[in-house]
Each structure stands twice: as C-alpha cells, then as structure tokens.
Length: 173
Length: 171
Image 1: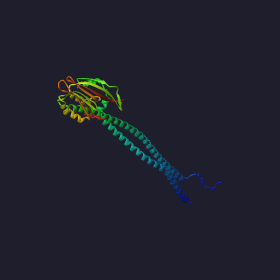
Image 2: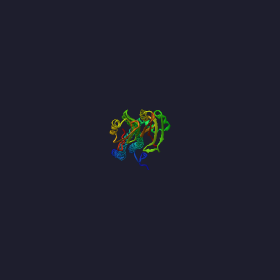
Image 3: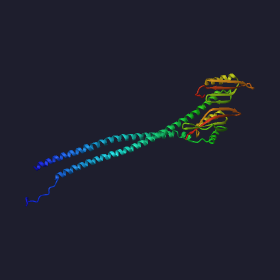
Image 4: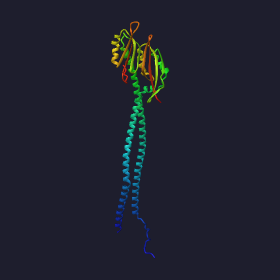
C-alpha cells in the first residue's frame, strides 16, 4: 500500500549547507594550525641559530683570550729587551763619562767598576792634581770616596781611589 | 518555517565559527606569537653579542699583527740560540782577543732563561768598547753587558773583563 505518489528521497544525516559550514570551519582551523606550525618552525630555527651564535661567541672569546695572552707576552718581551738595550746604553755612557772625567795629567792603570763601587788605580804627578781634578768630581758623585797615595821611584804618585754608593740602587756614573 | 530555520542555522554556524577561530587564535596563535617575539628579542641580543665578540677578536688580531710587526726583531732575538762561536766572530770586530767563559748554569726569570758569561778581551782604546756597547743592541741575541767590569792597561792595550748576560726564551 502506497501513501505517496513519488518515491521517497534519500534523507541525509547532515545537509549540504551544514557540510559546507563544517568544511569551511575545518579548513580555517587547519589553516590556523598551519600558521602556528610556521611560527613554531621559525622559533625553532631562531633557537638553532642562537645556539650556533653562542658557540661562535664562546670560540671568539677563547681566541681573543689567547691573542691577548700573546700580546701581553710580546709586550713583556719588548719591555725586557728595551730595558736591556737601555742598560747597555747607560753602561756605555757611564764608562764614557768616567774616562771624560780623567784629566790628561792623570793616567789610569786599572779600573774596576761594580754595581755600587768604582776603584781606580793610576799615576798622578801630585796629590793636589788628583784631589782637584779627579778627587772632587768623584766625591760629588759617590757617597764614600777614599784615596791612598804612595810615592813611586820616578817621583810620581801611585793612587788607589775607592768610591762607593751606599744604597741598593747602585746608580751608575 | 524553513526560512526561519535557515537563518537560525546561519546564526548558529557563524557563532560556532567565531568561537572556534577565536579559541584557536587565543590558545595557539597568540602564545606562539608571544614566544616568537621573545625569541626574536633574545636572538637580536645574541646576534649583537656575536658582533661585539667578532669586533673584539678583529681588534685583537690587528693589535697582535701590529705588535708582532714592532717586535719581530726582538722576538727573533729571544728565540735565537746563543752560539759562542758566532759571538766571538762578532766580537773580533771590536776586540783584538776575546774569550768567553760560562758562569754556572742558566737561571730562569719567569719566561726567560739567563746565561752568564765572563768575557776577557783586549782592546786598543776605550772608544772601541763604546762601539761594542752600542752595537751589541743590534746583535742576533738579547745580551746585557753587566758589572763587574775590569779594565787594566797592559803594554799598549787594555785588558777588559766584563759580564755578559744572554737572555733566551724559557721553553
């Protein structure tokens, strides 16, 4: 027994409009998740780069430290060498000054120079010549200055002049 | 009736759409963007630190290059081995005769090794010794002439005895 003139249409559980809406909402949600994924990938990439940069910073700092040590050592070498060169120059000037100090009348036979002392052995025509021409300048340079004279057979005086600087520095002439 | 139901459906779906989109944005996108901003800020800081470290390294490299250029001769002189025969050859330019005698063992002064020698030589006049003291600063080793210095007249020459201190790197 039929109740309708047409065959009944198949009724769907979700109609087309609902399907479209659900698909649309689903699509938007998927797009939003994809966008979030992109952001997360960007964050991860930045973090990886940061790790790489941190390693580079550590390497650069360690290299800088090494170079600084080398610079310090080279500066030290330079300072030591310059001190030695200056010491040689000062020594040269000291010896030159000593010989310039000796007048023509006095002949030196032996000179013994040490850090804090100077001993001169020589010949002088008279005690006064020595005292005026060499003794006085030596006394002005050294804190302690003693001279012993003894008369030679030729009538000239042999002398031994011991001069000392009291103190630790041992300044040269 | 059908039209009303369509409008009702539309409102419901619009409402659902807004809720879903806002929920996803607030729960997912907003925290991610916040994290991205913080990471970018941190990244910039790290990048600036890297640039600073690189600049510092470049400056040090330049400093080292300059100082190496300045101390090239000195560094080489410290590294050179002291050869007694070479020194005696050099001293022949100044002294008529010269001998070297090593005094004890080397002593260590921080990064440097010090050898002591007593030099006995014969010179014609003191100016030769001045020239020697000037030219020793240009010798292949770092050498300091030191006390005690003894000069004694002998016939026409001056017998000179002095101390030499040779400095090399303590390796």
